[in-house]
Amino acid sequence: MKPVVFSDFDGTISSRDVGYHLFHHFSNGKNDKLIPDWKSGSMSSRECLTREAEMITATVDQLEKYLQQHEIDPTFSSFVTACQRNNIELTILSDGLDFYIERLLAAHGLADLPWLSNHAVINNDKMTIEFPHDNGPCVRCGNCKGQRIREFRQSRSEEAQVIFIGDGYSDACATAEADIIFAKKDLEQYCQKNNIEYVGYRDFSDVTRQLKQNGLFKQTG
Ligand SMILES: [Mg+2]
Ligand SMILES: [Zn+2]
Image (cartoon, rainbow, N blue to C red):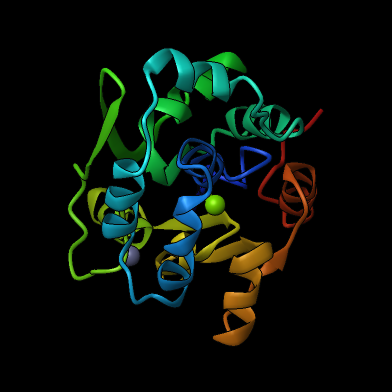
């Protein structure tokens, strides 16, 4: 089986959850009242993101300036290099928004990495969200990571060993499809609650170390 890696972006590759903090900042904290319903599953990601976007007023310049305070995991780029050396595909699956993923990756020299996310349309100081990816049977997600992994498997003739790395509830659907799950924070709790086997981690240096131990990263250094 050929190993392939899918990773969440917010709070996994980025040090903090950029989407949440961005809406929190520009809505003066108003988005917080939506989060409990989203976390409990009674509000879908599509509804939550649509309503969060309605709460904010921000121009592209203001959004870009705000993004400058966000960092990505300093150990992520050596993980990317290790995947490349070992000829392992790495794709980012996000239920967040393209405009900040694109900008943060580019700011860290990682503009070539493929990613799939929801789409933010910014007109003057108003944002609307579009959902370009079909979710199949899932009614919970904006961009369903489980559906993306199913589509990936269907598109390949060779069977893949899917490694997934995440940190939150938006990763829940991926846990049903992945073979090896790296989980922290809310995703770790979700795995524990649902008896899903996972590997705990703090950052990408832990993931790199574990994949070396598993023999999936053969070429190192
Ligand atoms: Mg996340
Ligand atoms: Zn889903």
